[in-house]
Length: 256
Image 1 (tube, rainbow, N blue to C red):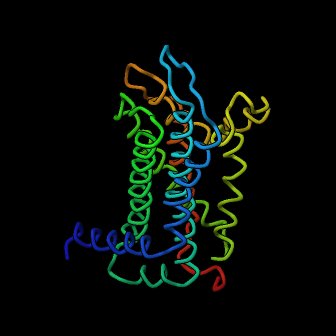
Image 2 (tube, rainbow, N blue to C red):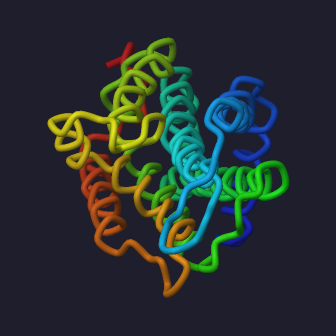
């Protein structure tokens, strides 16, 4: 079997594994949709941005998209990698002819694919149900989604090395991201966040991903590409990938 077919086979297996896991389906696909429906029901009205009147929900579609991307590419990937490692599956896979790079990259691609699909679902729901306009710069939005998903997938591999049991994976990932959602403007408008918390948020990639996803919805002209914010997100991803390359563990922690 050639390299491309071998990778495609592993990718298909990982996608099926994701879809057949009820926990993955709920927390990664359904939960962001539930959040969008709740926020759209609570926060109503319209505002003027860049000379254009838009519904308040326009701000929550990219915000919840941020949550969806991180759920798909960070939370889900971390849980999957830790579970496979602690069950001994990663160790067994490494002993097969399947290249180690295929095992890792397949799981990362699953995170990116799910994040892209999740973003499309949220955008479609916002458009059909809440009157949110499709961004004029789909290219800028797509780049932000892909860069964000790929970077957070890399962060997931680095973070997984610090989680020693499968039971701790979900609490650890949620503990890492939930406080940052609140201070990064995902759940709360940035204008209502104290300055010192906003300063803390700018250190982390969630804040910059949220800004990069919001820009295509609020800018009515140009490429709407938040280059500076995406560079920071990508830098986090590259740094995490380099760290994971040095510290990634294939065997269960209990056996080490």
